Amino acid sequence: MKLHSLLALCLLIMLAGCGNSDEALPDLPRFESVAAGEEFPAQVPSSFGSTRGWLVVAEDRTDPLYSEIRLPVVIVHCRARRHNDPVIYLAGGPGVSGLNAAAYPGAYPWQQDRDFIVLGQRGTQDAVPALMCPEYRAAVGNGTDLVDAVRACRHRLTEAGIGVENYHSLASSDDLEDLRQVLEIEAWNLYAGSYGTWLALTYARNYSESVRSMVLDSPLPPNAIYDDESAVNFEAALRAIASDCAGQPACDAAYPELESRFFGRLETATSSPFFVEAVSAPVTGADLAALVPLSSGRDVIAAPGIMDASAKMEPVVIEALGRRQEASDFAWGMRFSVWCSEALPFSERSRRQRPEATLGGFESAAMRPELCAAWDVPSLGVEFVDPVTSDVRVLIVAGEFDPLTPPAWGERAAETLTRSRVVSVRGEAHVPIQQWGGDGCAMSLVGAFINAPVATLSAPASEFCVFDRAAPRYVLQTGQD
Image: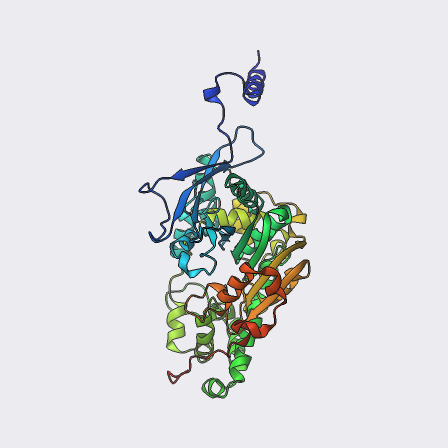
């Protein structure tokens, strides 16, 4: 008998379940609890009851000879005897585990009567396997070739038997549904931040009957083409902050004509790039713009001072330009697999050799096309970036000055989410619900929504302090705000 015939016969026998039952593939999905004291990547305060364990699923659900992957799960049990529909947290990134949310369950207003579930997404730091790419992080820090580093990471992972093409939002949404079923949950509430909102919408598109409600903190709907819009959004946020500063007498006095001076400096640096010590490439307007972080409300109030210093080219700016770059501690392999299969391929940026002129050529792509080419995963169907249509009740919360997921994207998502409400949080930037040092108004709105979605969607703004926030108190040169 020929070799290929033998292989085919063996496959048929395995699929039929013949032979020794001990050799049969184990049932999937399944949940494996972890006993107290056993090693696990997340801990819960001892004052809370919890269950920890692993969701075991197939890496590739289309492969009859599947490889198993293991995703960490923490269930923080509510304090009340009567359990309402639980809340599951979907972290951002992509490439962030999010398990640290289980360490602070008391921060969430639903903990009294709802279980709080945290799932480490496939491919992230605490999953098995974790698609970490130390090669890429080293290349960013050392200034060496990023494309070579991406290829090296992909080669190492595939040599280890990992199918990097199987790590995307469709597979993760199937993981979520598998978890719901093995835990025997009828329906649950999704609480998602940043990229997690993309995953939540993907799940709602495919499993709407499983969703009681959704909270989208900093919405990233699939039909928002990040890689074409992010530079424009960043410029709009910077101009909005400069305009807001000009509308406050103290800020305007400290930083007069901030918008024209800052953007004039960017134009000058773009038309006449310059060199600074310890940096081999010339500095352009895009490099100066990148010095202004806008990830939080604290970043927002500091932004006018940084823009003013950049306009004046103060020594602190030269020093910042000379600092060595570092890559975030993402699971970069998972990040590449997601972005290169379901985001960049549907952008105009994927077909251009360089960024457009916005902000002096600021890179709009979360993942540059040459890096995705090196990662080499197939793209999902174009229908993936269609608007998500759903009648699930949805609360959409966005920071007023968020350049990554602006309030306009919340409005865009809401166009096809028929039971939704969009809230722009004054003075905030990215993931305003999770700004733990703030006034807690956004989280209190979320708590009300989870408890009573219908009532909260139609409640007057006067019932919630998030709609009555004061203007940001910008940090001024004098040290006063």
